[in-house]
Amino acid sequence: MYFRTIIAGIMGVSLIISCSKEDNELLTDNLNRSELLIGTWKTTYGGPSLDSLVPSDPNYSFTEEYRKDGTGTSTFAGDSSVEPFTWKLSKDQKIMTQTRESEGETYTFDVEFYSFERNKFIIKDTSFNEVTYGVFERVK
Image (cartoon, rainbow, N blue to C red; front, side, top):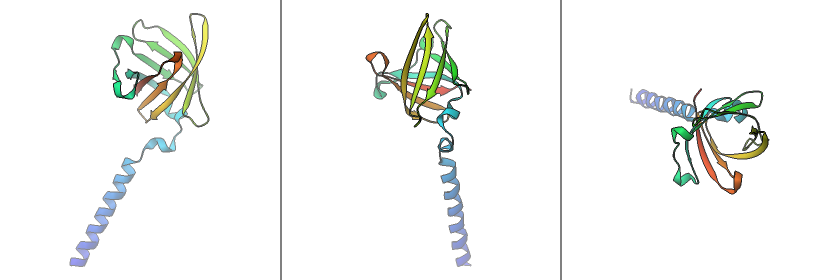
């Protein structure tokens, strides 16, 4: 009887450990960032360093939509202006290159993914000779 209790206990612990491990594995490991990026994202935090991120002012936040065909739109909350763009990830999927048009000018810039999860990513932007970080959370 004592032996059966020990075996049942070991099996129960093994089952709990295996379920916990599976539940804690990141689902993003099996999908590439190009697939995970598809959807609508909104800036929630920003700042010049990871230590000084502050909540995004609702009047200065962006909502960005990424489509499978490599196009997207960025909507600025302050005036509801919409800026179309194209996007492409580097081969290692750590850098995203965007090409945008604004006021008749075309410009291209790169941002680095500092971290990337299914429903949140952090980018490091070194455009315009300054470093800024932006936190984006999935809207849909």
